[in-house]
Length: 394
Image (cartoon, rainbow, N blue to C red; front, top):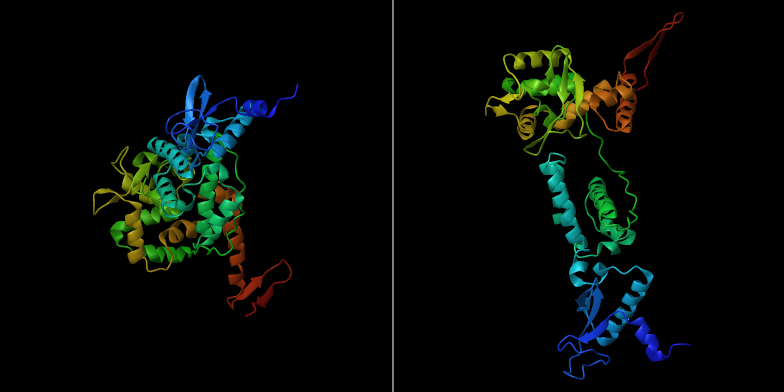
């Protein structure tokens, strides 16, 4: 037997009631006949307990809007898709970008306290939210898709590289939500950096000259890090017990993140690196009669281990070159290695996580060979039978 109009409505709304917000009386009229109030609330039973909803997404329930929402709720209940978090105001707030971002950052902070996440990276993420993500803060994360992310990107006025960093951070955040909150992963726009400035490098001779301008009491850290191709923050963190002097190697297993010493490197690995003769000599000299947890390099001005900021300051003040300390020490050394080593050897020495990075260095080294043939010098090409002399074109 087909349902009549009233029965159909009862069936569509049987899981829940519409009540007056003021007096709590059941309502079927636009205005409450008992108190004259027009705003409504929805009451439903969830897990044997009554739950009251006074609005949906900030819109107060009129009777018509409450009826529309109650019909939708009943449909979701019948389909098995009903989720209270999609309807209750307090739960909806937990779907906002700002709330879930806070949850994600707290997890990162917990990992940092255990030495499993970089304090400096955490600081950068927090600055991203404070300075760039405010336009997303009040949005429901389920409503952030390709369009919203593209509009966010289009509104940025920073460099392509920095914009890509912002989007990569968002991608990591949404990947966490996909697993943690079971929220679908949105599609992200393709980010391509086309205007990035190539890092500068200097020759070994120029490195020696630059370090030679630094006051003698501060030179040895720079010399050692140059020989091993270390990051400044890694070199500061080397301790005496990281040295294997008989084996001519050093263990790189910790770094500074900002001013905080972390027991992990950028790649979260422990790597033994061979020491050159120069590095070996420095290690033997500084480690003599010293043991254990003492830092290898001690700043004579403070009596404590160097900090990366101090070494950067010395380099900027004394080195007399327009390259930064990272370019002048690590980048230049890897570039120099790349002229005589293949990509796999460069990857091991530089501790790159991806060989593609090492291949870039080798490719750039091959490209730089054009400088050799364009210096106006006589290049002698010899074979067994014919020595050939050729001048390079100018």
